Length: 117
Image (cartoon, rainbow, N blue to C red; front, top):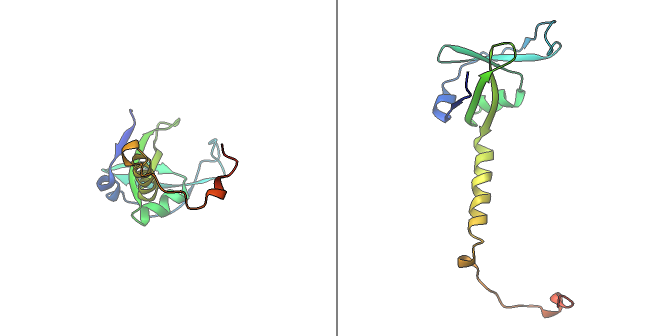
């Protein structure tokens, strides 16, 4: 399966009961836990507790799903609204640093720049 990307509206449709389940003792993930999530009748798994908490709080902006080594649908990545806001804020800051927006200012304390020649 190719990676499937869900948008914020689709992410909001994901259902879970929040129960942590142990990986099979024969699995390479033995000793760890995962949660099951359901989207459009398909189950996927994740062992990321931060994802669970962020999903429950409505903070997931997008999500990527793919098939894991065992042939099961699994989450391979997600983007939070908080992270996206930070990226966009930083991009706006960079965009405002263009030569067109540069505003020269008067040096208020020349001694502060002494020795920079």
